[in-house]
Length: 534
Ligand code: HEM
Image 1: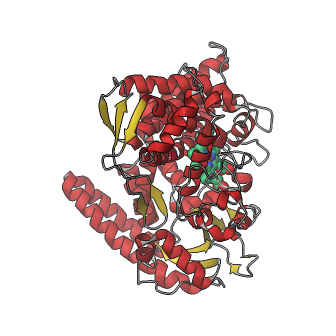
Image 2: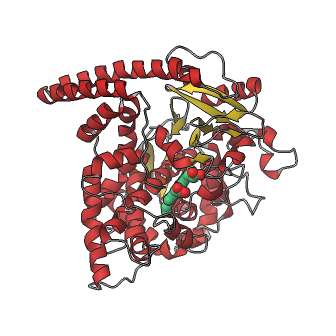
């Protein structure tokens, strides 16, 4: 993930000038009002601006389109296809594919997307950086770096990397977080999770507790991540663990005003009401003193951590980056790792909570390890790995992993996709389309749109961390997630430990319903789970 500047809205300067004056007026007015009035005015202003923006996007901007990709009919004024996509996200994509072929254009949330499906998806991931930019594409939907810039540039400018520099996040992760390297974190994963369980889930046999899985896992994953990536001297700081548990979630919540409001007003509103400055302050307050002491030799550099890898990675001119720059890169790892891991661990627990027979089989396998459970021996259990791969495959976003087109490109389907188009990948359809497999393929013996924890049992090469056309949850190609080996190592251990200590069920006995957001992304059910001590 690179730091870059990107303007989400491209309104003409004159319009931006007027909006800028309006913004200043609105903000001065807001400051004089009480909280309720302020929220009301903010919502009304956002509504009006959102309407104008949708109108601009839908009717004015699309006139300039040179794309030869078919545009899906049935778009409503202002909202485009958002209604159809929200009502039945996967069905909508499947119907479009049937009628228009593997590539088509839709309007969602005021934006036009070129949707690619099935075999066209790997082609997009393999395009060179000259044609598409993943980070800029994602930033259009979720302006993470714009928010961070707005929140914190006055205290810490992002480090300027030269094209010859090895990236201080990607390089350490690619080198040290490989399949055969993540075992160095096993002890810390066990320690951090045992502490969470002792703290929050000490249950006698038969005793029950209602657990909100998302918050529970966000805390657990944050605690594990801080201990593994920062180390035992500072990574146990409670303020930091709490701040990082909600960091990406806070950014997601701030994204709506940033995307919807014109630049100037969006910037001001976010700075005042959604800033992540407090979380970043904590991050710097905890990590900078640690790295300062390591650099001066006051404390030994004797623990493998991401932050000391970033500190010690020389720049292309042979110098070392400053302590503050090294510390600040931790935000990128936290952003990339904690929310994603929380999301899939939560999905996994919901899948287990309504499959008692599968749980019994998994317990039998885990039980064979005796009381010496750790991420290394848990990692060897094939059924658990097959189950996790199925969760990653099945519980995937409908449309995600945007790519911004940097120059006109012609796809293998013959369609022209012009510069500035936004390509979005129909991942759920790709993961669930049985037509992409031949009848003998062992993994397609159960229809792909059904959940089958045993699907990969006879395919030893298809581990949960193995990316491919049939599993794009970690991305594909050169940008594929470098933390995936760590993620599956951690998730499998956490699940195994929970299964062995508790009976976990839903109140209704059924799996809760996922939360679909505007037909694109998906969050795990909000339902609480009942934990009973064993
Ligand atoms: C289940 C958990 C996870 C999922 C589903 C996940 C998924 C992804 C995806 C889809 C991407 C984008 C790939 C692309 O653009 O093609 C990505 C990138 C990334 N992930 Fe993960 N990730 C997970 C956990 C982690 C963890 C634990 C770490 C750190 C140890 C991590 C570090 C990163 C980084 C640094 C990138 C940026 C790669 C780049 O910009 O080239 N992720 N991840």
